[in-house]
Image 1 (cartoon, rainbow, N blue to C red):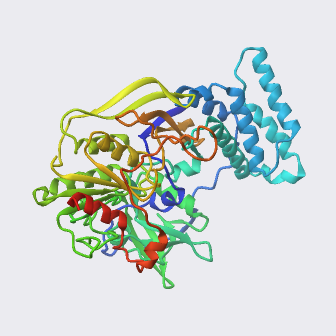
Image 2: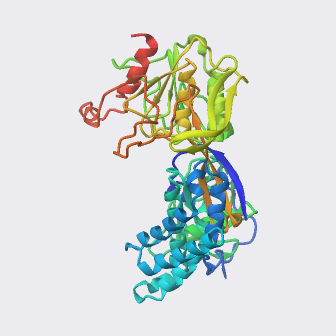
Image 3: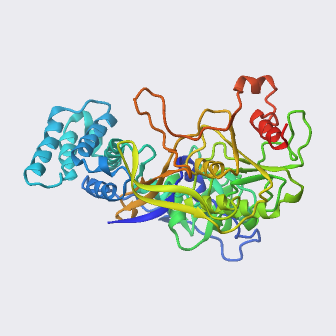
Length: 527
């Protein structure tokens, strides 16, 4: 009923990103005229009619089974009664009302039955709650399948909230199909952003440079009338994306309308690996991802505090620890003229994390000989790591001259892998951490994705282990006395640079004015 997917310590994900990039792609297509007969649009719809799904709350039994077996917070997960009450209360919180006594009675009766027979409570009892709720004229809209699915999502979120897994989440079947919980960094598609016009037609809102869409001849403003001769008139944007993502044939025979003229265009989708690494100096990135100076926020060479070009220090920004980013980071390090450098600045500000394998290898590039990278613990009980201990070490490949000074920039939006990376290097005496914030984000868990019923009921993203830095320090943020202040967790910088947005404004909003970067330059130079 479930399967494991993806091993990640990624911290934050945003559905909107995947909504339009899940179908992003590069290559293919060609701009030569189509030699086949013109595509004629039939009355057959390109998007399948949305199935009326009978939502069954018994899937919550699978959710609980998974978290009891896999969650690092399994001490809480073992309290099934607490989880069931949490699911119930979250449903009514979603409805913006307190939990009524009749609904609580239904749940408490099931809990009593389970205790009497030394059994686990059956979460499908929430079907009875829903059926009673739907009889109420005030909630007649709940008979709509989408509304019932929303209540199911609320109930899963109630279980997750009770579990106290701060970065866990649940994706519905549609959200999962759209690419939420996909942290691989690779997507297949056309390389476009989609929208709908006032006629509710699917439109091209943006075409990425060098993408399959551009090579095939698509332009911003085009209206997609049909694909493979099937009309898109009844497609929502999400439905269209799902159809594109799940098809086996990468070639799209499209009929589009441009300036009131219809055209036939062929686009061949390919995998795209987004550009998540930026550097100065710049290098040509693998897989035709362009020059690494693209999207650089600064001039290149970047400038020091006095406005002088910096040529003795390399700057590398990693936006996300993905597989493509790993390829790019590796190539940049291999091509740096390290003999003529004093140091390297690695910018992990606003980096949400990423895959554990990539991060371990990238830490290893800087370390000489076998060193501890992180300590993994299988359980977390009473605010204390426990259970099985796994020590991850490095000793594979050295890419960085040990004589070079390494400075890592972080902020409060650096999460998970973007905390492990600097902590592993600092604990091994290989880097200094600089930030304008007191601490990083504080995500100290390793997460995995678990499909429910092969993804047909969505998927869970939960913590399966907690990690410590090589020195044994906690990264997970904890508010031990519940006063709103985190006494433990996050990575504290070695050097804190105090500046505010007001300072930035007073310096003319100059993108080259960055006191955190200036501090890193001066530290490397020993000034």
